[in-house]
Amino acid sequence: MGDMPITRMHITFGLVSIPVTVHAATERRAVPLHQVHAKDGGRIRQRRFCEAEGVEVPYAEIARGYESPDGRLAVLTDQDLADLPLPTVRSIEVVGFVPADQIDPLALDRPYYLGVKGAGVRPYHLLRQAMADSHQVGIARMALRGRERLAILQVRDEVLVAQLLLWPDEIRSAQGLVESAPRPRRQELQMAKTLMASLSEDFRLDQERDHYREALDAVVTAKLAGSKPPHAPAEAPGGVVDLMAALQDSVDAARKSRATTAQRKV
View 1 (cartoon, rainbow, N blue to C red):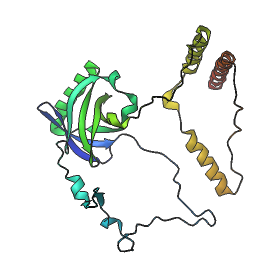
View 2 (cartoon, one colour):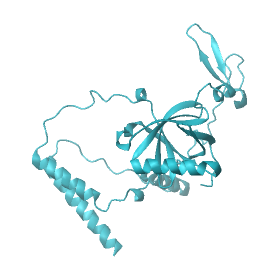
View 3 (spheres, rainbow, N blue to C red):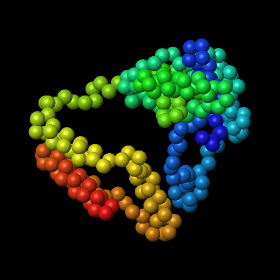
View 4 (cartoon, one colour):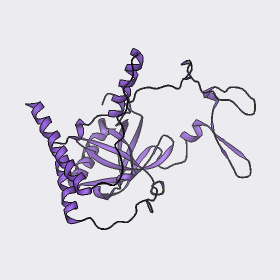
């Protein structure tokens, strides 16, 4: 990892303290779009005005504020937020370990690589190996970007990863979203499993790509060239369908697509 760390922290594991560097493990890739005036293409700029003085305020003079129910205002500076009295402000405090399959995927948030050099190398690799051998992940508390978060500490190859978690009360209930239905017929269930197997054969997650970004690139390229941009295909007609027939057609289409792909590779 050649990138600069976001911050430096310590993994606290019982009485063991491991100094680590924290690095972003992911990056967003998108076509940069700006807000413009549709009539003439002029850029739209957002300006910050002070209601009390009626003047534009430079970003360096902007702070956060909390207004109490009785109207009093507490102004919080960046320094106030950076120096919150959190016990985890400089540490990744491991509070326990659980099997990896106990983590709710809905709770997973942004991951961070934890790098190590020097004195922390030996205990770092000890913790990594112990977690890998036990097939467990650590549950930790850490303060990042001004807020304390839960995180799971997990092993990815030779590196420890701290993946932030949503707090339990941040996951919304799905109650009432799904209407009840009769149990699927045996033939339908078997055909659905056959379709799953057909779609899974030769599937490679690492070969998936961002079709939205490619489509947006195509539209932007056409616009810059002064030509007519491509558009979305017509929406398929809706309505009631024969479920078994739809499943069988899907299996046939998956097999045909796989055969075409195999021929191209020859």
